[in-house]
Amino acid sequence: MSLETLTGLNKAAILLMCIGEEASAKIFEELSDEEIGLVTRTIATIDHIPEDVKEKVFSSFEDAQRQFAGVFIKGSDFAKKAISTLDAGERTDDLLDRFISGTESRPLETIALMHPLMVAGILEKEHPQTVALVLSTQHVAHASEILSHLPEDMRADVVYRIAKIEKVSPEVITKIEDALHREIGLVGSKEQSQVGGVDKVVDILNNLKNSMDADILDDIEENDPDMVEEIRKRMFTFENLTALDGRSLQMILREVNNDSLTMALKTASDEMQEKIFSNMSARAADMIRDDLDAMGPVRLSEVEAMQQSIVKIAMKLEEEGKLVLGSGGGDELV
Image (cartoon, rainbow, N blue to C red):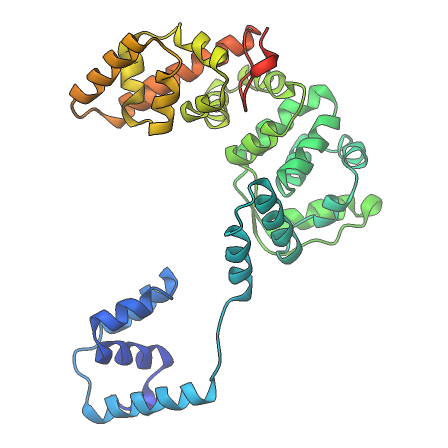
């Protein structure tokens, strides 16, 4: 082993071994998982460090410190973290979204600058799979607006196809760009992009207005009920019940027996439990508290199944027009 034959990774491994486990652990806190994996695998191949090599590595490290004095930082990561620490709710999310939009390359990004109605007018002539790919590359609010302007008989097919998309190759994006180039002059990214999927569908549907999401899901359910169930699970969860007003929550609780509710509350947050208890009789709340305290270990899958059954009750009541799920519900009760 000589300094001349050592790679930068070898030198880093030797340096870490020489400064000890505790100091190395602090350095690992600043490295990515991939970097830690590379250096630890290199460390595993070393069983002896000659004294002269050790001294030369330390000397080389000191030279590098002098040569590259200053602060090294990933500016993009710093900016994201700085924005994320703002305690400004939706404003924080909006600022972060704008920053990412302005600094990260997105395929078909010219679409984002066009009015949704104009985009829909262009896309309605295209195959639903092409439309799905285009919408998958857009921010959810913009994609939702475009979707709402598409022909009604096209929406469900497009949403279904978005849910089926995972990764798209650069060649496919290029073909789409070429096909649309005559009308909107798109010149897009050549990087492989993670687009589509059920999560993308959930975000898009949650941004739709006028209960359009329910009609779309009903249409998709005829072809793929399992997918619709998965989408609905992610669109509205058990914990989302905390956002309902008292009357809506009480209406749901009247449809649930105490044993089922106790099981569902096993993993619920304190906020969720208190919201439930405050909307039932004191006697019933005390009984469920006692049952929770006495309940032994249960399978997480059983708890989640019970929570989902209550969510289905809530969705059924919404379909019947008896309540509105989402933030509050309040005056929208009928």
